[in-house]
Each structure stands twice: as structure tokens, then as C-alpha cells.
Image (cartoon, rainbow, N blue to C red):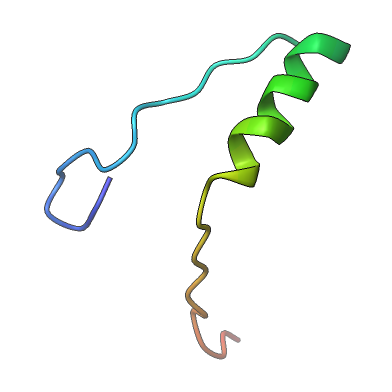
Length: 42
């Protein structure tokens, strides 16, 4: 979801087993993940 509340990517559900995690890894190979630093917190 972006900052405007618009869904960019549908949720991906997977089972907690070997086949589920293999599916997750396959899905993530096509995904672009972005991380934004939050800065210094005290």
C-alpha cells in the first residue's frame, strides 16, 4: 500500500511448510523491495 492508501501489490499468503516457503521465495524473486531509513532515534 502506498502513502495514499492505494494497494500496489495484493497480499501473498503462504503456508508454514516447505512448499509454502518455496512459493514465497519464488514470489520474492520477482519482487522489488524498497526500504527507507527512518533516521536517528533516541
